[in-house]
Image 1 (cartoon, rainbow, N blue to C red):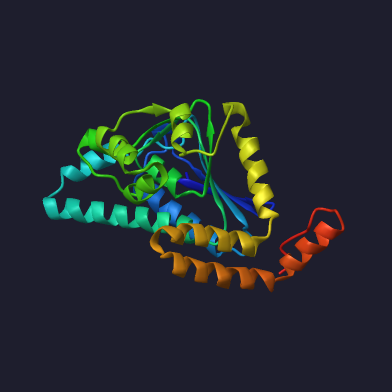
Image 2: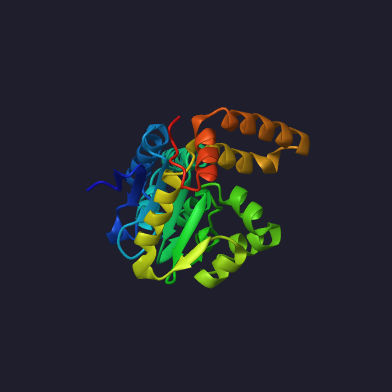
Length: 264
């Protein structure tokens, strides 16, 4: 069984975490598959939006604790090497999602724990079902977070809230997640798939160059001075303005019709 399913339809790539019997918990096979699938989505010019979802009743319950425990029975150096390899794959996958020049949507339901929360934070937009619940969880088993959580959380919720979520490892519901700004929209569980696909198709039919530049500008803004960000905006604006999509957007506006993008 493939640990991550990959499907493309209407220029939308859907990556489905596919270990439902283990609540989609992370083990080496899943990370290898996630890295391959995210790399494939990033490099495929026909893909203009990406969905990450979980099979079964949960998005992801974090790491596979059975696999973790097996590693702790190994000699120290062998155990260290196994964990280093796992986290290298985890981080390479996160970088793929953050750096790909197309929007990434996480559709989450049920448990969103450990790396599941880190992976959700790596997405550009998050749709959550009304039964979703969240916990960073690492501190509960004497681990520090991975998957970029310590980078994303302070930027999204502020340092004090990030400290509370990370240090206490407490579970919180979807209403709290929405209040903290961790999710964009909350929908009924039965509507999650349809609403996510609707949003992904909207993005996939949008102006791909403009969306890619916008994603990059927002992501780099935290590390740039105002002057550097203004320069980056200028370069991006001019690049977009010289693409066919811009002319089509103007034509659609003046002709009072919906533009048909991605001609460039």
